[in-house]
Length: 104
Image 1 (spheres, rainbow, N blue to C red):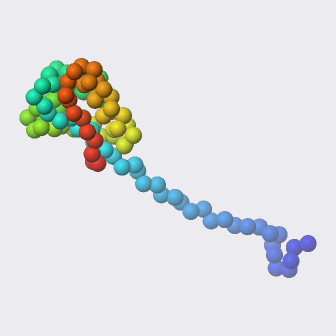
Image 2 (cartoon, rainbow, N blue to C red; image 1 turned 60 degrees about the vertical axis):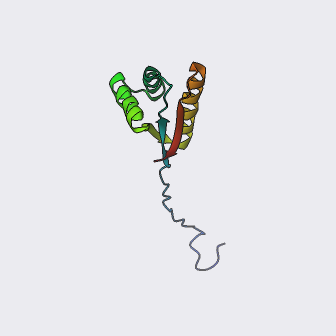
Image 3 (cartoon, helix red, strand yellow; image 1 turned 120 degrees about the horizontal axis):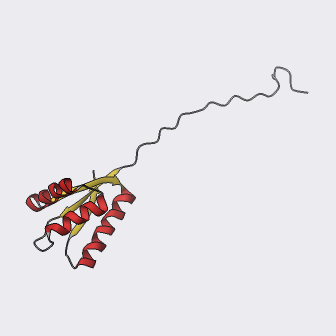
């Protein structure tokens, strides 16, 4: 038997809305050097960043003229993977191409 004044032991729980923040984004950058062929940079942009030929060429020219260019913006894990893929491709090809990530 429930104590007097108790309505059968019902418990009301309040639901709190949790607000998760979107993940921090990171940009993958390629750095210019005097040895890596432009064609190789365009190929890497097409293969690893899924850029069409025109966009890849524009990014390559930006890297060439400004010293660095943004290849894409991703979550940290995806950006780090892209950097590793590019660096491995450059090593396989014998090129000194550098690729980094930084907070967007």
